Amino acid sequence: MIHFQWPWLFLALPLPLLLRLLLPRADEVKEAALRVPSLAPFALEGGLNPGRRTRRRGLLWLGFLAWLLLVSAAARPVWFGDPVELPVNGRDLMLAVDLSGSMQTEDFVLGGRQVSRLDAIKSIAGDFIKKRAGDRLGLILFGSEAYLQTPLTFDRATVNDMLQEAAIGLAGEQTAIGDAIGLAIKRFKQHRQGNRVLILLTDGVSNAGEVAPLKAAELAAKEGVTIYTIGIGADEMLVPTLFGTQRVNTSGDLDEKTLRGIAAATGGRYFRARDSEQLNQIYALLDKLQPVDQDRQTFRPHKELFFWPLAVSLLLAALLLAANLRRR
Image (cartoon, rainbow, N blue to C red; front, side):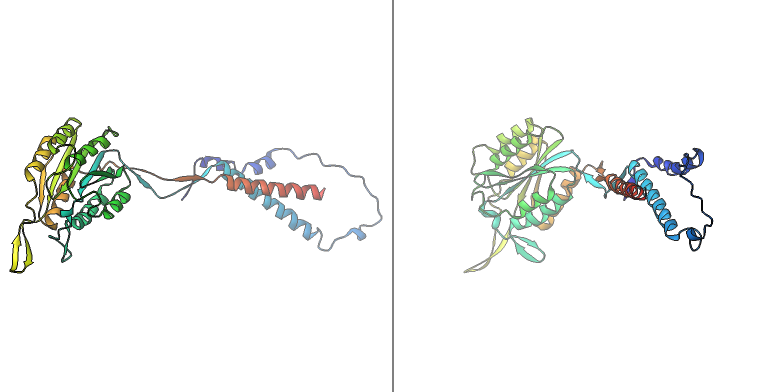
């Protein structure tokens, strides 16, 4: 919509009419008189010249339009766009996702079909990311080593895109939980404001890296980082073999004791996700434990428009001046 910043300037619109009524007329130029016996040779059909009358009326309206545009420009018209929500600097939230080889185990069900653990995380964590308006999000992928895939940013779409593009084995086949926590702490140090939360998802035991997980948790606690750990994987899975279908424990390598210790040391919580429904419930609970700040701020983009009526007004004034010079 268009809004005038100084609308009171439109009170100046009748100013030319007031000046015409209040100020005395300019002295008329007295021209030499010509004595003739009759006015018949100078008579015009219909009295005054209609063409001249129409031209004078057109110039009068042209002058009024130029004045109207000049006053409109002085009133400072501004175009305002739709309100845009500003990000709220409330929380730094980092996701650390395990990409070791075991994450390709298909013991989760989404939409009636078997999917890998990583695919389940992509689907459910992706919805979680979309809801975190106002939080600064980041993404760490870890396997044998930990990598920063997305630094802390308000761009939730990019974080989600990077998560969806993650692939098994991208960071190696083993699991370096301690290094992932250490990398998160390093990134959190660059942003001192707001709460700092790390959500770590893994299905195994830490068997790689330079930093022990519990030692990394102690460092996180000193830096004020809260860690929520999530153990991924079903307790058992039906696997066809030469001797028939057998039940296999697919989460035998999950180190729940260490994950609980990490969460307890930082004031967080440990969660167990055996299927897609439990994983979904965990993220819903995390939304309650770390609610999104509702104190939103918005701004409306705006653009100054005064130069358009000003330019047209000056053009019309130039035309009026040219017409007056030509008449003289």
